[in-house]
Image (tube, rainbow, N blue to C red):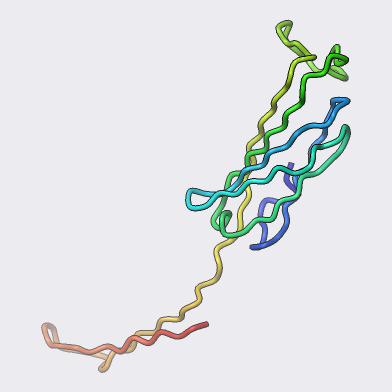
Length: 140
């Protein structure tokens, strides 16, 4: 799970992950929107509680999807999954495993950097008469 839903540009997001297996999990994280995507392959997650850190930037302005992929290598000593995890009879616990998760995060759009003001030359004009306006743009 993400530690928040909204982040400032350049802020680090943390994804909490629990590894129930007795071996490390390989990690791939990809995130972004339709304009930009990023990815990282952090160090393997050891068994137990862990976290994956990623810095969110322009690729998440207005919202982005985060795809988290976890992979476990085959392990001949893994005879069953730990705990009371329901499994199919077709599951081979010693085989390689892959789990994928989708998360959502958002970086708010920056405030408008330009101020626009429009002033009419005269407050009232006759219908069909020519008028004039002044448009001023100012940096914030």
